[in-house]
Length: 213
Image 1 (spheres, rainbow, N blue to C red):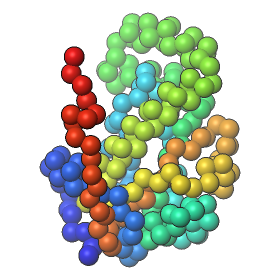
Image 2 (cartoon, rainbow, N blue to C red):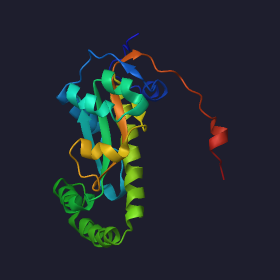
Image 3 (spheres, rainbow, N blue to C red):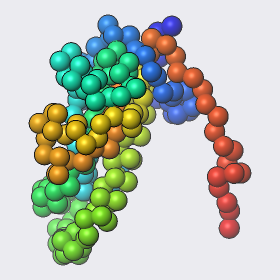
């Protein structure tokens, strides 16, 4: 049965109704305009010092999906039937955008000039001296935040998704003409309209996963 979910602002429906969908209606396409709106919503996710290290490759053409399917191991069905697959990467050289991010924050009235100057004075040397492994950890946490937000925003637009970790991560950047040292893969997110509903899954109770002190 194809999902009839329409756009919604019901956050409980968005979170409790989300399922990981393995098979999509291949006839459903998502316009460039609508996909841009979804990505814009996703990028409202928080990130360390607002550095926004995430990068997206939207793979929507038949040629692109067939190329990706060869790298997708046991996840070929999601890739080939979805409206698109969003490959989420982090830009390990994202520090290049630091000045732009802070300058625009001042220009738009989000941050006083003196706060910008103070923060840049602290942040620039911090990033300059951050070990590569620590920078990778920070970026990967930020990319996880944006990925989850992307899936929730997609559901609010009436689409279903599936996060995919099983693919050839060592090959995907070069397969899509990216510098594999600069752009490191996080996950694939298939998106479209479910042709077969996802299954509910058990969640450990709060009493098991949380403690109060």
